[in-house]
Length: 83
Image 1 (tube, rainbow, N blue to C red):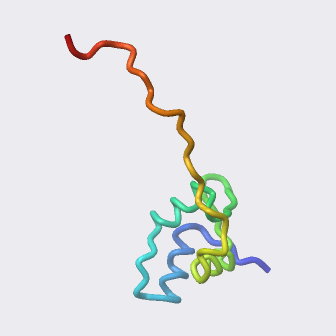
Image 2: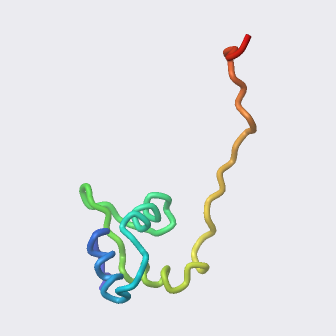
Image 3: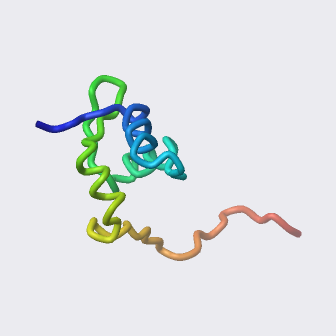
């Protein structure tokens, strides 16, 4: 059986396991938005599997590497800004 929780409930579970944690709702939300942590959407709420979350927090290097942003160099400015 999977233990699915909302972001708020997941943070409460983490704080229950470690009261001195610095892990916040903002950090969890960012991990979900970037795809670093899998989640499911139910209406307007995100649901997180607690087993996956705790596994990630215990072994952060075992997950996929961070995404790299590719750029095509410096973008030229089309208008003159000086005389």
